[in-house]
Image (cartoon, rainbow, N blue to C red; front, top):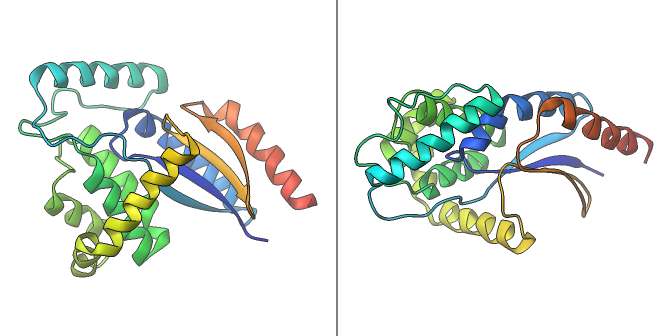
Length: 210
């Protein structure tokens, strides 16, 4: 029976950016046992108004705290560019569109979105920016644009949001190990690799012996 890691995240969640090296290592370890990584998008923030200066200051403070805790790099000087509408739905939908076109491209695209947002000061809520990053991830830009704008991606993104809400997941990153219909929670919230690697190893051992 197939097994997978379900990584519940939002590409515009700072703790998920801090967690990126950890999930990279865990996915590599799981992949050696034939366990795939699947992204589930969480819908961290859905806003329709331009981010205020007070809001920018508050969020950049969170970024600095994540950097201090995880060691991940953030460019707070260029971060959260002027005019940003901090709506994470488009970036989440970009990952869903990538997942529909080529599941193996979803995580590379997530990393590119995170890098652009946190280290390059790019506005990843914009469709044009997401198309550019999708092309860098190896997706055909026209096909990606069609999928991103299509009803299937809109519906699947909302389904992910609903699934996360129905499961009661309130924090990102969250990592589940799933086999069949059974899920094991590896973490809800950031944890360093040295804490999670033994948990994954025990689950993989159990999987091998089942």
